[in-house]
Amino acid sequence: MEVITTIQEIVEPIFKKSIEVYGKEAQSRQAMEECAELIQAINKFLRYPSDQRYANLIEEIADVEIMLYQLKVMFNIDDDQVFAFKVEKAKREQERLKKL
Image 1 (cartoon, rainbow, N blue to C red):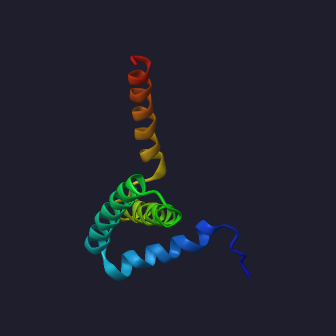
Image 2: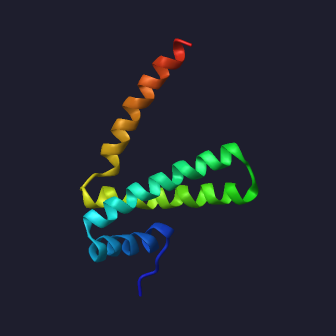
């Protein structure tokens, strides 16, 4: 019997199944909704900080990360592709910071 050793091995099949069941369009729209909820959670936490709003912020970050995973799966985007863009953006930010 195979032993599951990481959280990733547990959750990835579940979220891949969500894509199969609901489809790309529905999950893409869900991703947009989750991003909007994160925006709202950030705004509320900054305006009225509380333990409850902090917990909600964490939950919304988790939701968005789940949906980002599903978007990468649905559109065949691998982590290396995303990482390459992150590196380029970090270089640009580093240059902007030097000018301050």
